[in-house]
Amino acid sequence: MRVALFVTCVNDTLYPDTGKAVVTLLERLGVTVDFPAAQTCCGQPQFNTGYRHETEPLVERYAKAFEGYDYIVTPSGSCAAMVRDNYPRIGERARAEGRGEGLAAVAASVVPRTYELTEFLTDVLKVTDVGAYFPHPVTYHPTCHGLRMLGLGRRPQELLSHVKGLELVELPGAEECCGFGGTFAVKNAAVSAAMGADKARNITSTGARAVCTVDNSCLMHIGGTLARLGSDVRPVHLAEILASTEEHPYGGIR
Image (cartoon, rainbow, N blue to C red):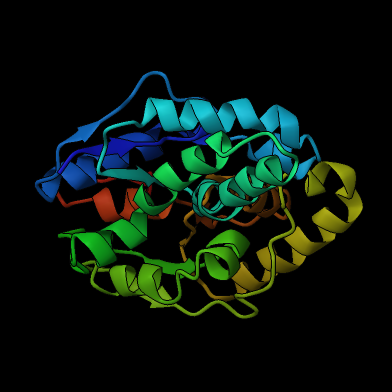
């Protein structure tokens, strides 16, 4: 199979170790991973802010960058949901406006091939034990896009439950939003901060050493809030936990 990594803007700019962890993990499982250099933003910030027409060239660029790959794997529930849920909407709107079938066809070409990492592991590779080692208590926050748009369900927790040494601690109010929401955090800063504070307090109450999610955008918000509250709980992307072994630890916790 031909597999490509869609690293996403946030990871490429701020969390490159997450992208590296995905490659490490998949290669350990026998998957050869390519990184198409032509990839850019999926268009989510533009689309969520109401700039649908400005998003359309990014839909086309995404399809072109990942042309010919059997699977497009991303460590971001948010960006995977943008492709799977919103690309078809964008194509349909273009068709309804009398601008032809082209954009709808482009969207249809990438939607079934785009997978969030935990989906790819459990649904395509059919694995739950990836040979990881992370000897710490960890709590999991199900991000809104992963939970509600992708329907990841218990896939992430199932993967975490098979990590050697890891104690998975249930998070109170787990399904409540962390308050980030992309541009929501900018437009509604006070509400976003209050939601983040509630989430951080619940995370701290678990006694976990780390909190993980499938989205570094949410972890950025959660981690900043935890730091301001003086908590020593470390935010770690799920990919870094799954890539971690006794010989090559990820996640920065010793």
